[in-house]
Length: 218
Image 1 (tube, one colour):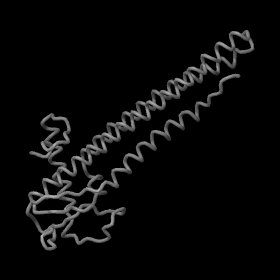
Image 2 (image 1 turned 60 degrees about the vertical axis):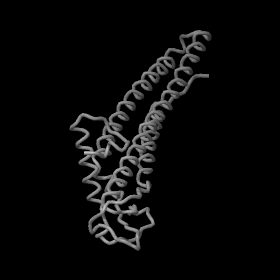
Image 3 (image 1 turned 90 degrees about the vertical axis):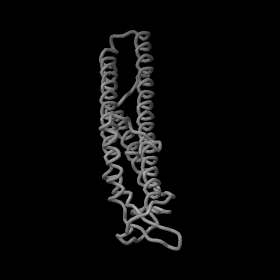
């Protein structure tokens, strides 16, 4: 039986698989509940209910304007592009071998044809395994970015809360349970600026991004 490989289908499957990984991973970020306990005494951007001080952030805006996320998305997208290019080259090379086999098969003995078919089938299997390894690697990159992003934001909110007397910071976006919040409680811009200032300091200092408490110190 002659091996059949559709190069267009292979490349579409890889592209779809990698894009789904990216969309799912980015989607997860939008459902993180950024909350923190602490105290940090602050501004008019909070409200006190008894002993409870509350503020909120728009997580969509934080993710949209956080330079750390932008930079890392560029890196991951470049890696995805390189992976896709490498995979396409390998798939095209295999397709060329299959085309040559199909063209020359009338001139081959049964033994030669069988040996080539087995070799091509093995190469096809290896290509499929390579595709899976690329998807897993990219998924791992996205997972690590998601964890670090979550840690960075929650660490910052904990510190900000301690400095501004907040016990609770809510997430406010289309997916949250917060249906309305007065603008005076919105600390989104403050959080975005604080996160970006810290990230800028890291980059200027030549430090790698950190997820422990030292990452939030200027």
